[in-house]
Length: 182
Image 1 (spheres, rainbow, N blue to C red):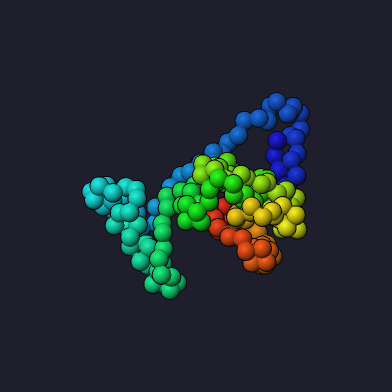
Image 2: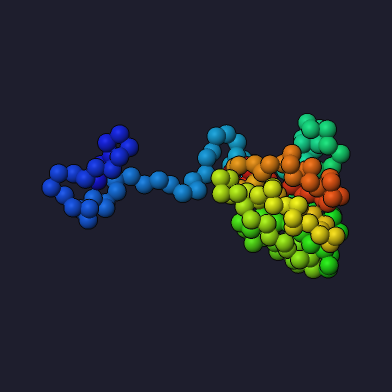
C-alpha cells in the first residue's frame, strides 16, 4: 500500500496481504545524545549516586530554587514518588477523600490509598481526557482533603477553575505534571 496525499492507495494488481511489509523502522526510546550526557552519566556512576539525593539532583534543585525564587525544591525520580510525597506532606490519612480523574495511571490513586484515603473518581472531558472541572464540586464532601488534577498527554487541566473550587472549599491541590511534560 502506498500513500497518495495522505490517503492509503493499494497498488495496481496487489492484494492488501501483499502490502504488509514495511521498509522503514521507527526506533522506540532511542536516546538523543547532544553533548556531554555520557560524561555526566559516567560521573554519576563514579560518584556512586545513581538515584536519590546525589550531586546532580542537588545541583538541579539549587538551579531551580535560584531561577524561580523558590524556597525549597524537592526532586523525585517519578510522578509516583512525587504523588506519594505530596500525600505525606498533606497529611492524608484514613477517612480522607481525594478527588481524582477517572482516567489516570494507577499510581495516582495508590499514592493516597496507601495512606488510608478513599479515592473519589470524577469523570473526564472527552475533548481533553482530563478531569471534568464542571463535575468536581458535586464530588466534594466534608471529608474531601485534596483534588488531584492530572494533565493528560501534554494537555493542561482547567487549572484556574480547579484552583477556584479548591479555594472555595478549602481543599488542597497537589500538582503532578509528569504527563504535561511529555
